[in-house]
Image (cartoon, rainbow, N blue to C red):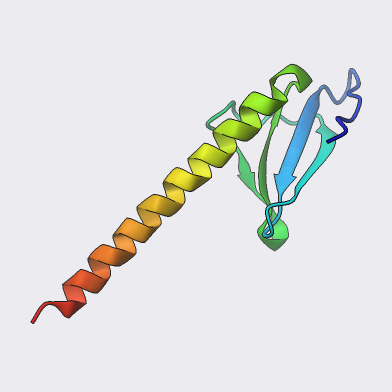
Length: 87
């Protein structure tokens, strides 16, 4: 993965993950709130921004957060199924 060169005006690396799991990198002037921050973009993309030195750590944290969120969603759906299967 080629990391784009940042500038004084755009010091952050923005990573976007599309619906297929592909990661696209660009530079940005916006910061989205640290490892636990992030954004949802149009077309189903999600991502975050960070300093170049933190990119790998942020991507790992982002993926772990998404997995945790999906597991919680699955548990909620299983509880809903169990509720409707009673009686």
